[in-house]
Image 1 (spheres, one colour):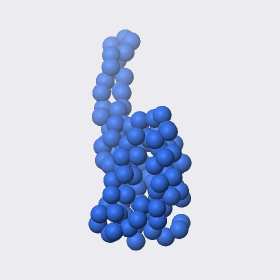
Image 2 (cartoon, helix red, strand yellow; image 1 turned 90 degrees about the vertical axis):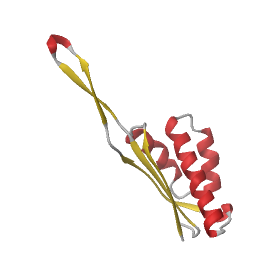
Image 3 (cartoon, helix red, strand yellow; image 1 turned 135 degrees about the vertical axis):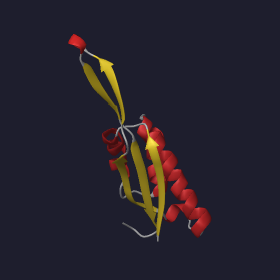
Image 4 (tube, helix red, strand yellow; image 1 turned 120 degrees about the vertical axis):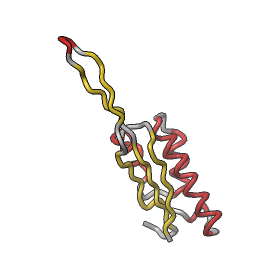
Length: 112
């Protein structure tokens, strides 16, 4: 059984989010929550919130125990970019790309 939770349009670049998501893959849900509480990054807080949502989906919708859940996948995909411009030398403009991300966590009740 797979349980999904998605957080969309977060103002974190996908590369920074993937650094934290890489730590979670294959861990139990309880162990991953403890790890995410200790990660001092913005993407860690967003992934923790998404993981809590996935655990709540499993407990409330499917009556599964929190201790029996494993993280099957934790992915951070790029979302749309906000494009801004800043004045540069000699009358030129430099592009500033403000990146967004979509965080997805899939839990399963079977050992990965």
